[in-house]
Length: 469
Image (cartoon, rainbow, N blue to C red; front, top):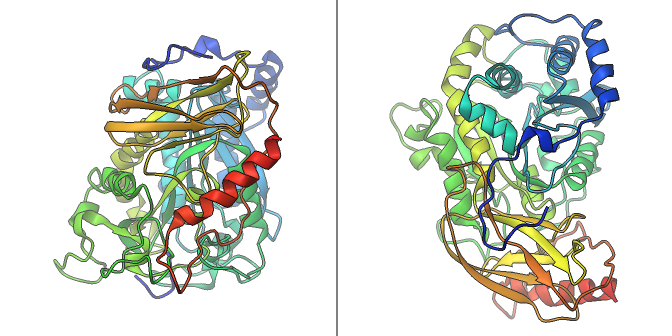
């Protein structure tokens, strides 16, 4: 829970279909090595509805990779304070590397070590996905068109330190340096002076090394889907204590997509109350619930170019394991439906006059400019999550006129592929340098003028021009 005590190039405008698994040429040596591993790793026919400690979880994850080498890749993104691996299992047709046009999705759980339901749900989600591949057409196509990253535990030390399960609070919430990891990220509104923890640093590097588009962070202690911003300035917050992003409509839709497919979340009932709707539709703006500094979902949105929401999945933080099967039944449809949303909106590449991709080009929807502009990756790719409707998409590189294209964006979740729109700058031939946004408060407020995020666009554009020239 969030706080202690609270509760390749195509025609422009063309739609992209499913990518054939044959387009991904995985290395034969990797597959052979993984198959040899299968002989060494014990594999259970099914995953029990019990709590899995670090050795058991590792055995399960290694077993999945060994049994499904074509679609599963296990790796560690770092280590905890006590040296435990922060495991990530990647699922997809070519799980070892990014493919152009295939969006990256992630789930993270157990950020607070004593909030345990999400950890087990993600293990069962992994088994469900590999079991249903080539059996269920929706799951098969989802794996064809998506690269799914799953981190069952961001705080394995806290989980192992929770010796006595408690519905409300235990010291296992924190990492072994007694730090709350969901207060440990850079904050876009206020300087966060806490010491960055190994787990946080590992996740930040992971986010920067991938092109994540959509994410969810699984917690416990309430039953609600929460979305950014978690923090804000008093001058930008509405009278209803609401701190909205430029993409508030998308975030509300994303949270509703999970809550509406959950067995009970959409009722919006607070834990400990009887038929009192505290969260209409089962969702809430993070700041409207209560302000939170240094949270992971705000960091993802601002610095990771990734839309992340926080999912509170159980009133009891560490429930008896006898209830885990019911939690899985309550959340299974939602977990799948939410992954589909990574295909909302528009995607594409930006090219120069020679047909080479341009990294660090700014591509954003008109009226939705981000305080840290969303830019293309090293393949010249961009992904913009947008609800179906009419938009004007603006692509910008230094020294030449920007390109503005108007289009009608369909619902890409229907065929699990976002609308494709490429840009070509015929008069641009430079090799750009990497552009990064400083991890410090980017929203500024003045006592003499109203709050305007666009005040920062000029210095950021100047920075962009400097690194190109």
